[in-house]
Length: 86
Image: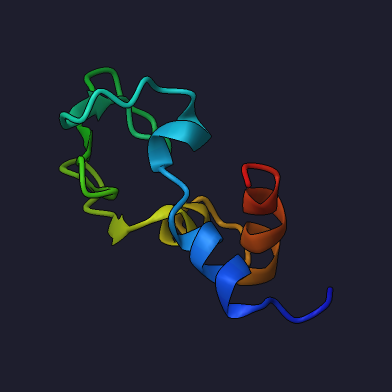
């Protein structure tokens, strides 16, 4: 993969987690079933500032790249996956 320009990397950083999950981004926090572990009751919060935190497994991060890496994508695989959303 070629090196990313600063502008391309910034576009990747600005991808909303809501977009990846197919959620409607209504500007409010949303509580969903955690994609990082099995659960019956939703415990993962997606915040309006594009951060996330799971009260069950304690995974947290800020932005789509962190989110993909928590889904066990490597950094490069995260970039390739997220490039589809630009």
